[in-house]
Amino acid sequence: MRQRFAIIITIAVVVVLLVVLNAVSYVSNEQKPDEEFNPDRSTFNAGATGTLAFYDVLSESGRKVVRWREETQALLADENRDKYPSTFVVIGRTRIPFDEDEVHSLLKWVEHGGRLVIIDRAPDPRLLPVSDKWSVSTKTEVLPANNVHPNNSEEMTAGVAPARPSLPSTLTRDVETVMPSRFASTINISTTQSASAMAKERPTATPVTEENEDEDEEPPPPPPPSLPKNSNASPHATDYTPRAPATYNNPVLKSPAPVAQIETTKGALLVDYPHGAGRIILLSDPYIVSNGGIRLADNLQLAINVVAGETGIIAFDEYHQGRAAARNQLVAYFAGTPILWMLAQGALLIFVILWTGGRRFARPLPVAQLDRRSSLEFVASMAELQQRARAYDLAIENIYSRLRRLLVRQAGLSHNSPRSEIASRVAARSQKLNARELETLMRECEEVINGAQVDTGKALELVRNLRRVERILGLRMRSRETRQAAEGLRETTI
Image 1: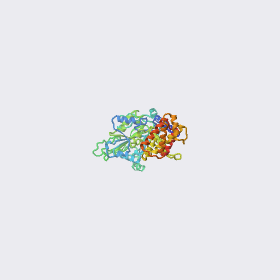
Image 2 (image 1 turned 120 degrees about the vertical axis):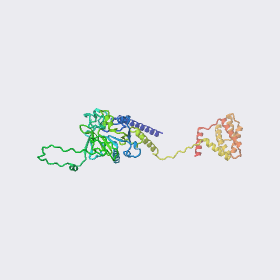
Image 3 (image 1 turned 90 degrees about the vertical axis):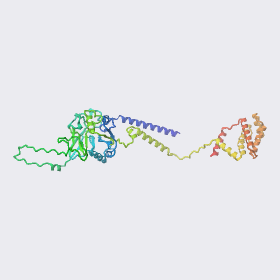
Image 4 (image 1 turned 60 degrees about the horizontal axis):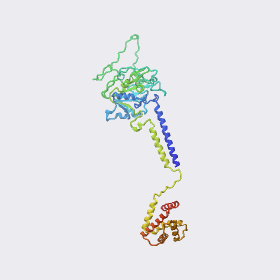
């Protein structure tokens, strides 16, 4: 019992320590704010780096927004096309990177008319395919340190001038100024044409003679591009006009060159360009749509124009933010709390207890065999056996032998004393017994024990008289005799 008490105390102490450690870790996690150095751009995050406010604004304004928690291959499913988004939004650095199959599926979805919106300072280059001879890349000059507070707008925008739209379009509608952070990257638009191809396309220089040396005749302007037959497009249409193709096989004529919609002193901040029948939009600063920066200037209006520029379902990528739908909903609900660790530690503790209790640390001991029968069961069994065998002499012998020992002790004589002397002395001391009757009873019992014939009625009468003598004399078995009788019964049963 002392060993078990020590084990119980040890288990209690371990459980208390586990609860205290989990509580301390939980409090520390709750007090830790968002960091711009390691942001969480999920629409589930209500912190400064999250996008929950932007998601709620779109939802409350009546737009169809969903949290996409599946792989991008599901965008190409043929069934239930009405339930699939027309705009797919990827914000910030994802916790789970895109693999090759997902990139291929996403770009194929864009080619079929989808609208891909990427809001990141350093987006995955695979999500920015080349458009004809043009390529888009980003360059970050200042990286956020681990001591930058994203909820402090003055610290995030220190030394940054508001940016203005460079072209009027649906992306910049009702936008006067945009306030990016000082960590916004610059979008570079470059051509992928090789030097040899440029040399071939470069016109040969015409030698200047003395006759035309002073002439400033300008070459004729190139003819405007021819429009498709039965096309309603204006010859003066700009490149930034939103594309509205009827089908993928018959798109409206449009330049493949990327268009810078908003520019800062360092370079472009917002760029869009076509890809197949769809379009790719790149915004180089997630702070504009985050909870900490969406309220500045016209950041909210720009975010709505970029994301909700077309009708249909708007899907925010949550699968690559580490919140996939394939995860257990109960586990996802308790994610970030110490509940899961407490359950795991409790299961481990129970396993250790069961494993320890099932092992032997000493020599094997025999299993204790407990006698579940009572003394009355033994007496009843012996009485039934004696009755069936008609062994009345044995029953009388068991009772008379004990009574004779008590009578000899009561009379103060030896065991070999005659019956008459024992009976006379006991009767003299008790004054309630007749010496002759007691002697007769003793003689009849001894005759039955020695082999005299006796029937059931006579045996019951003798036993009844023996019990009456015990009651008159007040003879009871002493504790030692009781213990010896119990041990005898135990040995007999074993």
